[in-house]
Image 1: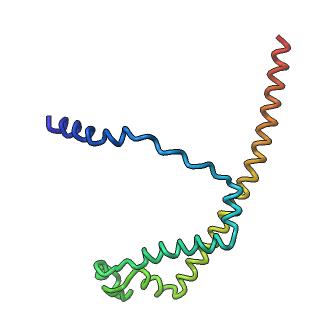
Image 2 (image 1 turned 90 degrees about the horizontal axis):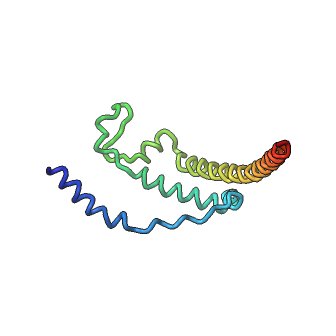
Image 3 (image 1 turned 45 degrees about the vertical axis):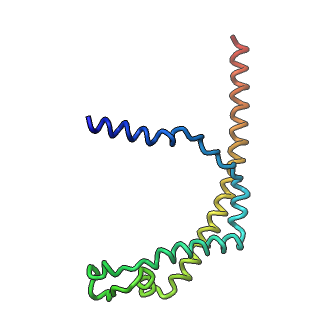
Length: 144
């Protein structure tokens, strides 16, 4: 009986959430415009800087509580952060991360433009096939 009452209580609490209107649909995104924006060096730099900020937040994580699990030869100290460990294996990791992020954003921009171009071509192909199907259907109907 108790699980049943808990279930009824939970449904009562969830009722207002189900009564909410659906979230509005996000506006349609033009792949060509998005690809063009992502191909702009200024946008690439801004997004790469955002990636840097998120990475910095993550890399400031102290690994102290887990330091004693590390290989003693790794010299992980209780006050080390993930960034400290990354810098040991690659002193230029920040620059490399930034350049990798920027390159990935540029590649995404190019891919978006290519997809947009290809989708227009696929639409034309689809239209040709639909036209041929309609034509074939009309010819078949005329034979009846």
